[in-house]
Length: 141
Image (cartoon, rainbow, N blue to C red; front, side, top):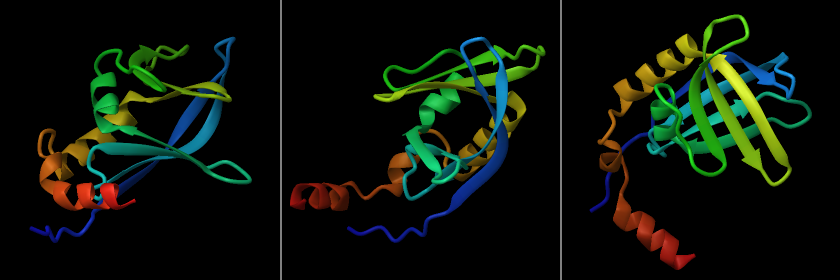
């Protein structure tokens, strides 16, 4: 059975801040992205030069990390207060070449999460994935 679903997407540009080891923050232009083509994932696109960098991770990490510390592995997310006392969400991204700590306004993350959940409520992601076709493609590779 083939599912015919056209992908919908959300891209939300927002100001993030890189936080260094001393706690100093530096503005960083980035976007959160979500597409029904991959309903289990969310991406952050860092608009750097010369080449933008994309991090993709489970959308549940962003949703759960908005409320409480979560993550096991390369991505950790938790709510926090900035040095100015503003509510932020912290994203710790780890790679073989190092780690980076990013903070973003809780209000901006909340807006993005609400849009994402309006498009694909939690627990309904599987309705958008044709697991038989995915398995066939995986096994034929």
